[in-house]
Image (cartoon, rainbow, N blue to C red; front, side, top):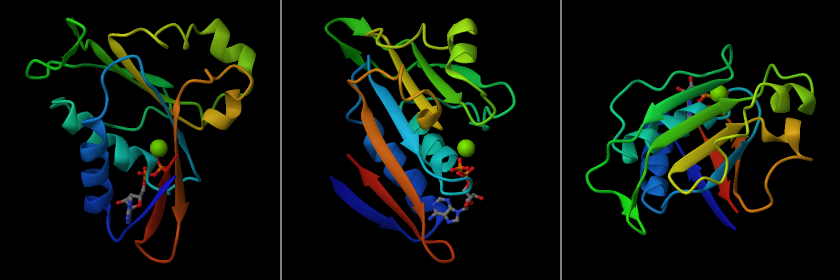
Length: 148
Ligand code: ADP
Ligand code: MG
């Protein structure tokens, strides 16, 4: 467990960007924490760290956004990273919705990275092999981020 305190949104983006460097493909990243705790802000940095130039907007209303990764030669076992899936389950009512929407199909494919906000909503069907990150609101612009 690593606890980090960030003092403003830029520091949280930087942390996401730095975290992206350890991703090799096939990871599932679960982002826990209340509204406004910094999950999407972290994702902006993470996407940037993967070489994604598009703006990262919260997928709250559409549940999932797909970003193509065209990173400078980022590859594992000869496989080039293909897509970053950014999922936001805030509006999901049940695990059945997630299954019927096919939201979990990109999981655990070696060429994809899947990051999920509000993963607690599907705790029974979340893959066990994943990286958990917890976001906590401290006072003002401070956030505590725990990478498990
Ligand atoms: P979430 O996705 O968890 O609901 P967002 O990342 O969308 O949260 O929103 C976080 C909000 O808090 C943004 O408006 C951001 O600018 C602001 N903010 C202030 N300080 C921080 C910080 N240290 N880390 C992340 N966001 C911060
Ligand atoms: Mg969000």
